[in-house]
Amino acid sequence: MKRFLLINLFILNACLLNAQQVGNKQSKNINIMENSKEDSLAISQTLDNYFKAIYEGDVALLSSTFNPGTLLFGDVKGQPYAKTLDVYLDGVKNRQSPKDSGKPFKGEIFNINVINSIAIAKVRVKMYEFNYHELLSFHKIDNRWLIINKMITDVPE
Image (cartoon, rainbow, N blue to C red; front, side, top):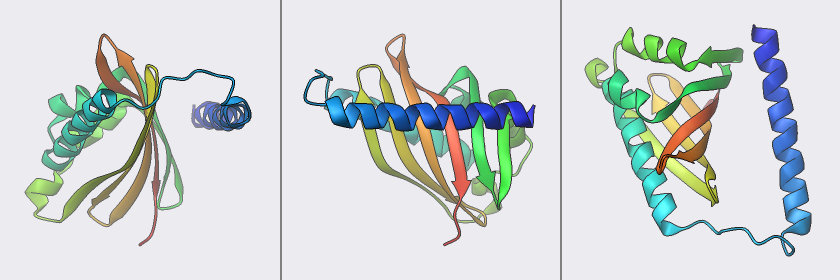
């Protein structure tokens, strides 16, 4: 399963890189809807809920920020990280929340890029001894911005 997930992650990254390169070359010829303030604000609100839910350990609120079937990939402390949404939510449910631990927590949004009904947000979550940098893919589904993919890496400070 890990091998399958890692292969899919590699393919996804290659596709995204190729799309970015093609987009850069042809940006003058393609009429793309620019990052609207409304969409960015809606994604920011979803991210506020995401950060609050992680901090408080609120699995119901956290679940509401994701599309069912979301996959999570990356590395933590140098080890591969690949989980389904259900496994991730179960882990949050069964751990002590940062709020209850009394330890510092900080969620930051670095940037949000929106193109039509898709978006990418680059965020950082500092909790416990971790300094996570995350790339969250969003899709506007039924007029709601939901996380559809989460890529995460733990970066030493």
